[in-house]
Length: 131
Length: 131
DNA sequence: ATGACTGCAAAGACTTTGCATCTTT
DNA sequence: AAAGATGCAAAGTCTTTGCAGTCAT
Image 1 (spheres, rainbow over the protein chains, first blue to last red):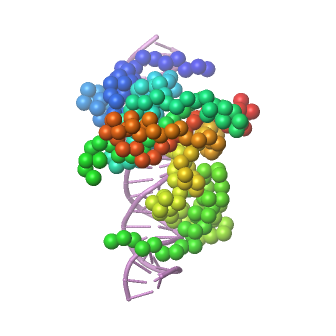
Image 2 (tube, rainbow over the protein chains, first blue to last red):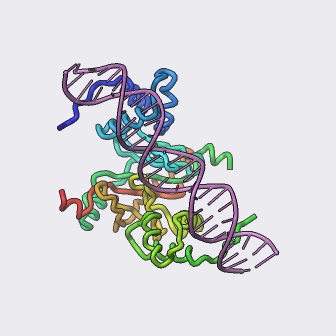
């Protein structure tokens, strides 16, 4: 039986918070941001709602940095820059490559491609300065 | 002071095992494969040596699938297909896109790109059949 | 000898989950 | 009411680490 979701203020707040930033936050960050306004918020609720929001396609995983999932409220596919020093995740202001050749390669290999993920690793401007 | 590494049969075996497969194994898999031949092998040793091998650039992370790191003994940059159903990681038989435009975008954004990671998600042939 | 490597088990980090209670419909 | 949402704390999964003993140089 299909789950019929009910409205939840906390879920709304979690989604809004994620969409309000381009910092590609972690669950922990979302929790810390909302805790002042929702003192009884629990981390479990944040995780549960992130799972729901991902299922609904309102949030995606930007990348996993040091074993921690980083979220993205901007759900159209786009490249990310990840700083290997400080862990910052930055939106790459570039288009993704044409998928055509990849789709056919996938087909050739019996693989059905549904989604693309392009991540560049390196150093962000702050960390470059600090070097 | 620079660490001067000593030879270790287990490290050799771990590297050989990782290089001997295209299945992009997890630490756990490597451990289970080697355990019969090295009955006193411990999982901690596998993790420690994988860390060393990554540091030496002999092994890289292919991707993180369901929170588990998947390794690659083929260290030149190449795309991967990840099956979202069974978690299989498959080498994409395609070239990476030209980095030129991305490098300049990175530069424009103050980011120094050092490495590229391209992953396609979808369904592998086995899981497609099973659908 | 010296210092790296190892097994073992404990600890860590992040995430998930069971249960009783509270909310939304 | 019925069923989803939540807090809390416990449990789970993967990985790292401290320590004492072992091995390579």
